[in-house]
Length: 346
Image (cartoon, rainbow, N blue to C red):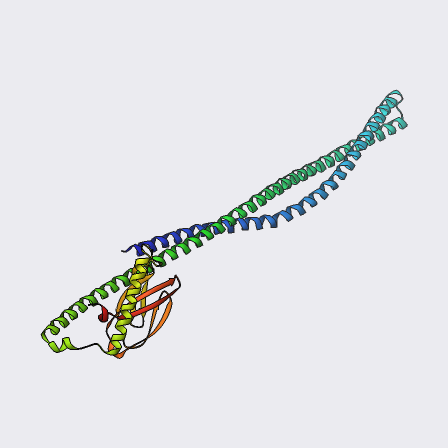
């Protein structure tokens, strides 16, 4: 398993863990929001109940006050009836007759009725007091529930804000991590592809050089054996191209000699074309770069550092090895020179 595959697996694991954590936070956030909604629905109900209890308490307070006043009056009436009964007993004992006897029985009946009234009103006061106490307890419980709900709402809102902030941070971190991981994988893929192309180009160039060496050796051997071949002269077109190539090389060598130690503008530079995958340039010195490639005859387009150059190559040079010299005027602009290698280089 290569490094890119391992990195992809690690990134996938990180993304899975991040998503799981984010999902857990979202579940907690949903629970907190649901609790807030329930508390918000419950709180108005308790407030309405509080108003109803307050109204009932006020009503029972008035009833209790009236009942206590009635009880006090009954106690006073009973006391008067008791006094009247004592007086009737004394009067009857002192002078028993029909009138004192009737007055005594009437006093006894009045006292009994007064005692019954006290007893009834006492029970009424007790009932009202009991109901009033229950209402007070219910009202206190309602107040405590409201306080608890308000505290729950406050805590729930704080939890929601905290969870929302955490979730936002987690999503941002996950997004940043995903972007960084994707960029890293893309960079690794680009580097791997470039290294692969470079190896292929180097292999291809080595094969070309080997083939050229064999061809040159064969040509030299045949020239030695065939005196006619040695007598063949260059065509007028090749002679002109040879002079131009020699002048170019002289100028390049002079520029390199005049500007020693100059650093290259490009770390990597390659020659591209319809028949060229990407031939690497070699830094010569000054601002010059050199590459070799076999060409096809006819109109050609070459690309160097995103600059395109149109060239028309002779039919006789089809399949010939050309030397390309790129003169970098700046990082984004340059001039492409070329010549047939066999004209000036053996």
